[in-house]
Amino acid sequence: MIGASDPAQPSEEDALTIRRAETFDLAGLLALYRELNPDDAEISVDKAHDNFDALSRFPGSAIYVGLIDQTIATTCTLIVIPNLTRSGRPYALVENVVTASPYRGRGYGRKALLQAVSAA
Image (cartoon, rainbow, N blue to C red; front, side, top):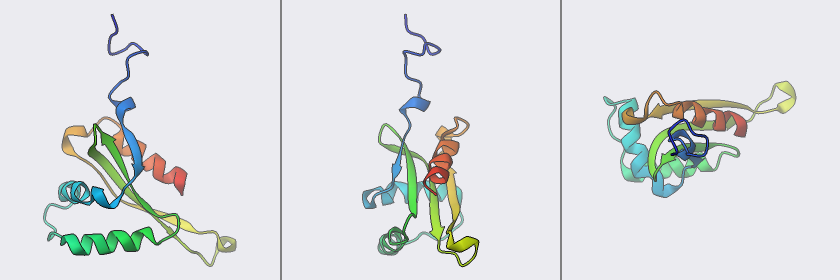
């Protein structure tokens, strides 16, 4: 019998898929961001699309989403910034790291963060 500790049985963590967010992810992202900042005024869909498009034009920058069964469980945003120091090497900021409450405590946010760090 295959049990939860059996390496042949995929764990839920193994089921987490991390990828760059696409425009069609915006509704799920906005819902998740409500958990991060529940008191913030909601952004309009048009403004969200405009900001997503602007972010996508920053080379190397991205919003990463971690998916469980096509549901966004976690996310973080990577911004790569041109630099005039360090021989012109860019630097990066990671922001808006959030995991949906049902998925917290499982290391999903860490996995998304590590993907952003790796991409940076």
